[in-house]
Image 1 (cartoon, rainbow, N blue to C red):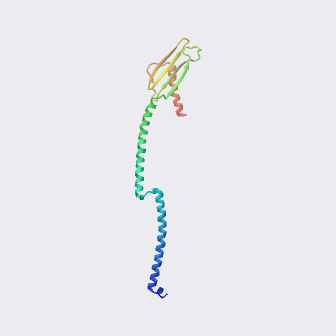
Image 2 (cartoon, one colour; image 1 turned 90 degrees about the vertical axis):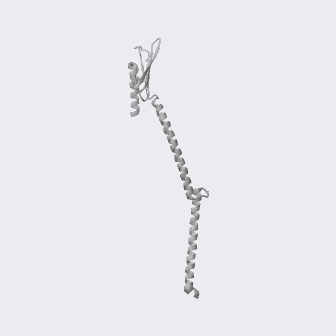
Image 3 (cartoon, rainbow, N blue to C red; image 1 turned 60 degrees about the horizontal axis):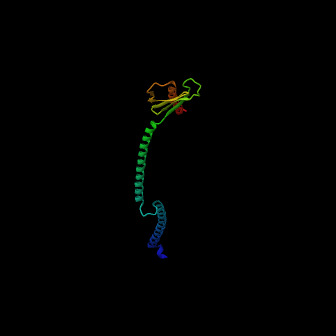
Length: 171
């Protein structure tokens, strides 16, 4: 016991305490390292690579995906432009007018229909019914202006077609 009270004994006890503390810290660090490695295995999927290589791989995959999305967006833009061009030439305005062409009581069998695209170009078809015959007339319209003079019913069909579209947009 005399040796423990001497300077050498005190130094030995201090060294033992430091060694015990170092051993305790090693145990704590070992447990933390196990948790970090378990988390790393979860992230990396058990593959033998480090986090830097995994991050680089993720970056490459992200860049490839970004390129694919950019290409898909460009293709969609091209398709949208084509579709818009087609839609511009589709029927956008239409109206049907029924009337008695000859002032008879024939049940309003005569009709005029306006079919116009977004540029207000298209045709006006008129079917004139009489007791003995029926006639069909077609007149072209370009940008709202007819190629031939229109009957009042044909004018009315164009006017109603354009007005109906205005009501749809505002209501």
